[in-house]
Image (cartoon, rainbow, N blue to C red):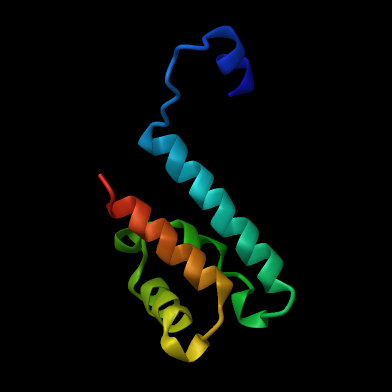
Length: 91
């Protein structure tokens, strides 16, 4: 972005939906990896957080819903996932 600003100072920077979603997915994955060290229930859940809810198998949806339940208070990965879903719904 700095190079674009230097070369084209009057240009506006925009992000397309695909690249914005990719950045959010990376952030969700980083949060999960960091939290995984303290929360063993996050083991083997990477794709539950990254796939669209509608593309998950029924068993995967159940597992994700369990991880998103209020009984899992303080799960930072769940909060990051909610932000990801909000971005998916934003058009």
